[in-house]
Amino acid sequence: VQLVQSGGGLAQSGGSLRLSCAASGKIFGIEEMAWYRQAPGKERELVASITRSGSSNVVDSVKGRFTISRDNGANTVYLQMNGLKSEDTAVYYCRAEFVWPRIKDIYWGQGTQVTVSS
Image (cartoon, rainbow, N blue to C red; front, side):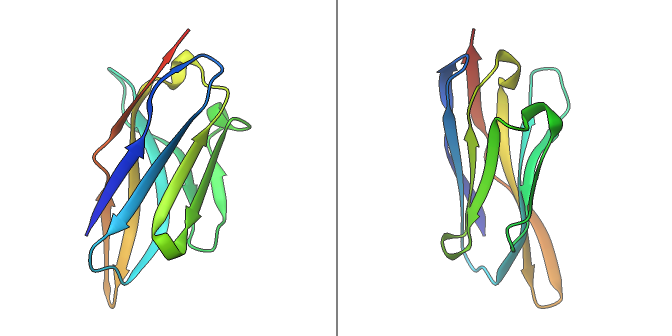
């Protein structure tokens, strides 16, 4: 099982970027999927999460600007980032809770750099 991220890169302040994270391998089921980010010198923090049923949450600092969504058929989670600010600059990681009969495990994507220039 693995998570492969795509998207990200460089954007100007006020611009938009979209991140994708696709799961592959021997997948039985995926519960919660989420996006985290880690800025230089800071701890990794939760940005947004979404359950298999589509219930989502985003942290206050990105509320109204970022939207998390998922395609269960494609085992993919997305993060649409609008109104980007310099403080959004960080490495973004996707996280997923994989489940099999009597087993649950968490996997992380490889990370994607997002840089917002002012």
